[in-house]
Structures are given as C-alpha cells and as structure tokens.
Amino acid sequence: MLDTPGICLEQYALSFQNGFLPDSPPLQQLPDPYYSPWESIVANLPSRIEERVIRQSVDELPILTTSKLASEPEWRRAYVVLAYLTHAYIWGGDTPREVLPPCISRPFIEVSKHLELPPCATYAALNLWNFRISQENADLTDPDNLMVVNSFTGTKDEEWFFVLSVALEAKGAQLIPLMTNAIQAASVDDAVLVKAHLDQLAEGLVELGELLERMYEHCQPTVFYHQLRPFLAGSKNMAVAGLPRGVYYNMGDGEGEWRQHSGGSNAQSSLIQTFDIFLGVVHHATGEAKDSTVKPPVASKGGFIEQMRKYMPGPHRRFLEMLVRTANVRSYALSHKADSPVRDAYNGAVMSLGRFRDKHVKMVTRYIIGPARGTPPSETSSQINLATRTSTRMESWNGQGVTDGVHGTGGTDLIPFLKQTRDTTKAAACYSD
Image: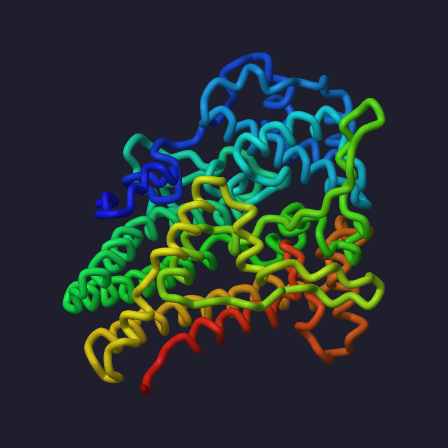
C-alpha cells in the first residue's frame, strides 16, 4: 500500500494503484461541446499532418477560454490536446513554424499555469494522460492492454512507444511503497526491513528492464526516428533543427514572448527520478548540446535531470522535493560496514538501476544512432527537422565522433549525456569503507 507512515502520498497526486498515473484512465474527449473545435482537429491529426493542412486548420480555430474546464481530468485533457496541436503546428511542415498563434498560445498558457507545467509536449501530455485501456479493469502493466488516445502519426509504432512507458509507470508504481517504507525503516534503524525493501527494489528494477526491452516488439527504429521523433522535439537548443530563437507564443493584441522549452523526454518521468533520489544518486550532467553556430546559453542551476522536474505536474514535482529532504537510505547503508547485508543490498539496488540505464543507452543507440546513419525516406528528406538535420550532420562526420552532437528531443547532447548519467548511477555503489 502507499500509506507510508510519515509520508502522505495523496497530497502529491499519487494514485494508490497506479503511482504517477491517474487513478482512472484519462478523458478521451472534453465533455463540453464548446471545445469541439480542438477535439475535431486532434482526432484526425495524422491525416491533417500528412495532407499538410494542420497549420491551416489551427489558424482557423477560434480563441477559446478555459472557463468551461470543470475538473482536473478536464484540465489534463485540455493540456494533452493543446500539446499535440502545438507540436503538430510547429513541426508539421517542410520547415518548422516559429510563431504559435493566439488560438493555441492563450489557452495553452492558461492550462499550463493551472497544472504547473510548461506549454509544450511533456512526458505527462504524451504518456501519463494520453492512454486508454482495452477493457475495464485491464492490467496497466501489460502494454498489450493499452492504446493511445491521440497520435501524431497514427502508427502502431508510435502507440507502442508511448503505451510501453505507461506500462513501465504502472509496473514501477509497485516499487514506490518499497522506497517510502525503506525510508521509514531506516529512520527507526530497522536494518532487516531496509535490506528486504532494497532487495525487492533490485528485483523490481530487473523486471522494469525486461519490460523496457519489449519496445523492440512493435516499434521500428526507422519509423520512430523519421516519423515520430521530429514531433517530440522541443524549442530549446533546436537551432540545428531550424528554431534558433525558440518559439514565439503570440498572445494577440501585440503581446507575446519567445520561449524555449525542452521536448518530451523520459527524464521527465517522476518515477525514474524517484529511484535516483531514493538511492542518493546525484546527477550533475547539464546535457547541453554542442553547436558551434549558437552562443552557449547561460548555465542554469542544477543538471539536466534536476531541470526536468520543471516539466512534471506540480504535485509530482513536490513529491520529489519532499523525497530529497527525507531520503536517508544511502547514508544509512554507508553507516554499515562494507560486505554487511544492508550495504550489499544497497549496492545491489544501485547496480540494478545502472543496468536498467544500460538497456536504455543500447535502445537509444538502436533507435537514433542507427537510423541517423541511414538514408532518410524520400517523403521526409526535404523537411527541416531534428531527424533530417541529424542525418545530414552524420554524413559530414565521416564516421568520426559518431555520437557527438546528436541532439535529444529535450535538447541534450544525447549519447554522452546518457552514458554519463548511467556511469554516475553505478558510481553511487560503495564496496569499501
């Protein structure tokens, strides 16, 4: 159960059964017909993108208010719809569009403020609040039982990519009480219970790794890289993809502002960051992408992983902040001698998380580096986006520095960042006093 003594998880919008996923499946449509102009476009998003009419469709939208959103599920649904419309509008043409019209900017910023999220396609929009189930009471830990509500491409590959993350969240929800209970056990010096929870966590991380590898079943690397990934890109560090200044959110009446936001990234998963914080793994990698044509941004406080907490729903972010203050298992484990049961269990959990990240690095190499070396499909070769520009750069490198400069959708220098994050995780293990 999630009712851990000393830690009330309800206030952080964590589901008893599903962790960071909502208690009930997300809304598939806003109930008030007032919002039908949004819903009618997003319902046929893949065809509108393919027919190159998405921008015209969005430009013709009326400016709707958020006054008719009556519940949190409705606010979340509005966020999902506007996130999909935003990224489809920006990336749904031969060149990216730098200016977002008021019919999107105004309601999206209002909705984002309510949910304490940035106005872009975050992990919450793409995964946490964008799934449906095959039947009532379906097992959310099995991706075969899940489907997406909205899609950029309409492909099974895209659907599988997203629902697998939903299944991972559902599976990982079972590990949250182990961690919160271990914190409580450490605070009362119950070494036996701390060890037991750490051992269970290590086993659970192995199962998550096995579930992650199911990605290969229905998601083809070329489809992911060339068709889906360009729509996941943000507006930060995206000069290489045609957005040197980011995106201008036009509010109308001469008002607006340039914004730069990271795109959807698994680093925005509160679950993954929960593992790090619980185990005392501190990541300092900034993930800043290298681009000689762009002036380096002013360094922001904290590494990329910490910055990604700004892209999480407010209550989830506050859960992580609470965990930072209360996590004590690493210090407790280090207070025990090397080769002690508690220390061994702690190291085992750390290395299990490190092996999970090993699988992620291999997956990214297969889904991004491999397709980037290949020839782009003829229908996308003339476009300017994250996929085509990365492939062009790969050609010019002639096999040297083959992974440097490959930008993630979040704007990172992808492979070096992931490897450093993986190495930092494993380095948290301590085998000697």
